[in-house]
Amino acid sequence: MSTLYSSCIRALILLTVLSDIDGYFLHFQRECRYTSKDLHDIEFIERRIFNKLEYGRYNSSLNEFIGYTEFGVYNAERLNADPAALASMLSNRDGYCKSNAEKYYPNMLDKTVEPSVEIVSSHPATSKHPAMLVCSAYDFYPQGIKVTWLRDGEEVTSDVTSTEELADGDWYYQIHSYLEYTPKSGETISCKVEHSSVPQGKVVNWDSSMPEAERNKVIIGASALVLGLIITIAGVVYYKKKSTGRILVPSS
Ligand SMILES: *[C@@H]1O[C@H](CO)[C@@H](O)[C@H](O)[C@H]1NC(C)=O
Image (cartoon, rainbow, N blue to C red; front, side, top):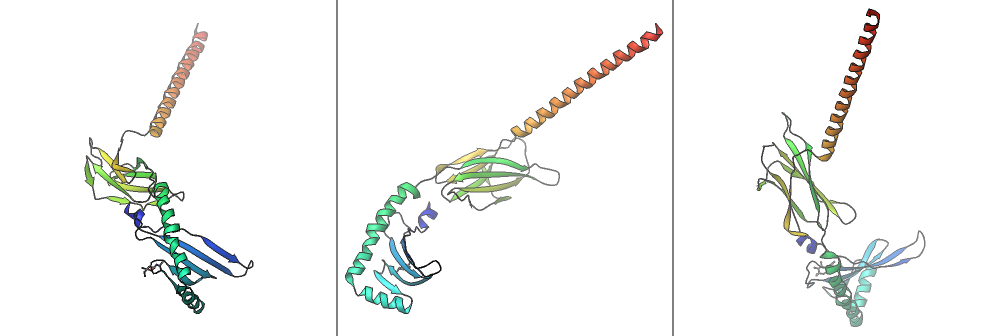
């Protein structure tokens, strides 16, 4: 949650004036900046930018225009001397920023989506290498997740590596945590995920029985073997019968 509130929310309104295809570009960029839900620190900024250069800015925390170029300074002094201009800019802080920000919390910022969590075996143990399990949490929102491994309920701290929280590009995130371990029979390995969408945490146990795809391969292989045996036996029996028959004919 905290990462969410500390992230800076910007609302942009681009007032653009484009004089020609390869001409000049003037734009005003409005930002509402806040880090706390009670909005006590909300700040309204209007940047005035000409050909990518910000020449002046209004900052509601100062209730002042600031100039960054000769033209910007000239404008800032002129506007700062005009109480009506300042009052009208300041009114955006409450009238525009606050009223919008209040709507973003219930509709966007407070929304959470629970991840789907699964454990897969990346490679089984061999005499040389320990086994590796991957715990993946998919499609969660927002960012800010904790993935831990448990062996018989005890948190594992060594031999654990993890990816960053990866953005899917569609507002969702995913993360993968890797556990290297030497299997012990009878133990329970679980992956615990803590996220704002599941306050009580979500625990998934590793099912070390064969995954379905593997099981299917074994079943298909075994069936083929049995079928092959039946055909072979039938062939041998048929051959024996025929050859005995042929041998019998001349001897009779
Ligand atoms: C606006 O002014 C306040 C007070 O000086 C400052 O802390 C803040 O960083 C300024 N914001 C921007 C975007 O310049």
